[in-house]
Length: 274
Image 1 (cartoon, rainbow, N blue to C red):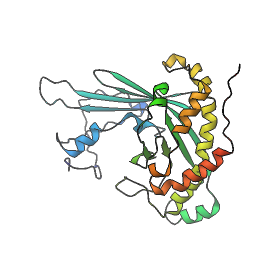
Image 2 (cartoon, helix red, strand yellow):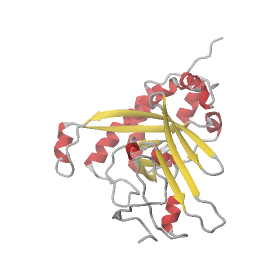
Image 3 (cartoon, rainbow, N blue to C red):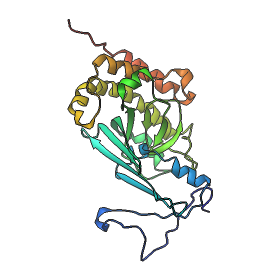
Image 4 (cartoon, rainbow, N blue to C red):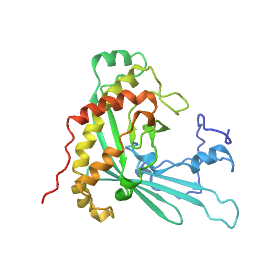
């Protein structure tokens, strides 16, 4: 109703619009939402962050243009942009306003899963046939030397878009089944349980990427990221972000327990050369 929440949106065709839009060849979509000031929906738009773009692979840019509150104000414009580096291993997110441009960087590790036949059979009853799905883990790596001393805050779980936080300081992404509220994922859901069991592969895979992170950051030094990190510093950061049971929602306790068992067999501490 324009004051509380977004339900279904019925487009109204306009032959003319005030926005100066790019050509149709650029696949640009413009949505005008006549919402009232100081309502919850306005607050929701104000709370949008650049990391919304992390796992929306076909979306690279979002512009939010708010109408001025008075004749003396200018348009309130926020532009979110995603730029992939190193074949998508490093994702740069930008938030540009009239006053400044803020950049954040993420290390993103993905794995494509082939869906087993028994899971496919169950899925056919509730959704279209799925042959494969992608799971991912993303670590904030902006100002990494500072983050080693002061860990990042808890991050939301993602099902392409952010849900609520489950206590992780990194982001876990999967095609989870979620309720209409999109606040959390369904528990006791065979698809979500299978995804969770397969996601134990992500932490060991991320460890392998962290071992190569100092070299990768050196190759991307033009981006303004710190390239003086040692293998020890990177490993310390990786280990510090592994949550304990009392930090997590109990639903993911088994994920951490199984991941730790795998990590204990592969982690090697770097040795300084004399």
